Length: 293
Image (cartoon, rainbow, N blue to C red; front, side, top):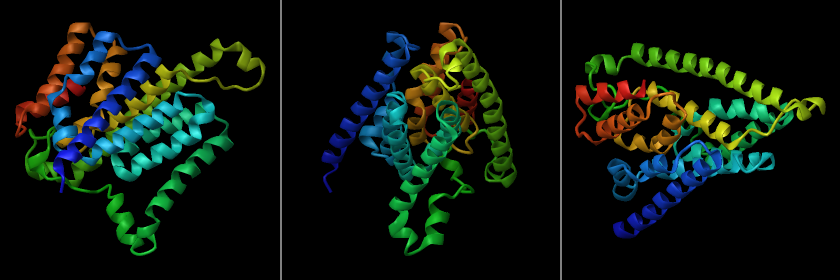
């Protein structure tokens, strides 16, 4: 009933998310202070957090808390998995980070520990879902993890240039799923090669027979951000609130890209512009997809 109080709470959440990302960026040493300033440059993100009060904001906050735990040392990975699974319990889109997280677990933990961390993620889902699993299990699982959900065409920001019958078709959904899985696979191969170079550089770890090294903050955040970004690029529909899924990750992704700085700013501006055009138009959707690619 007290909308103002709710907005004050979400304002605090917005500040906490910004601070968490700034700390991650500082620890990664991949983002310049000028690029960090972009984190507070989005009118749409202000609206998503402080005016619209979407649960996406809560999910992404828990996600950044999980990433902070992952970069805090190998002993924090179990706690990070608890936070990650809590984020998934709020919003299913957090699963887009899962391929990157699985890769990091395999690279940075023994196989037994990786299996245990996955068990933690599953256990949190069972505990939080137990009130519903004990009463209406089929309806809960079907409703909570509905991968075949068809979004309304009127709200899509990224595919408004398609006819509505194509947008809602199963063929498009299948094509996007194949593209997502294929791109995840290609980037996983690239990530593995990068980690192999890190292992080769750490001769002490190799001589001790550990075969594993502590991954850097920059590597962990980039891996997770890329994993999510691939899912966003091939998402069937991006609604306006979905911008919060990846906005705070754009400065890092642009910083590690080989584009000239003027192109980086142009890409950032194009994405921001596309999400601020309401209602979305075919041209704004094409602009967004071009910026993504």
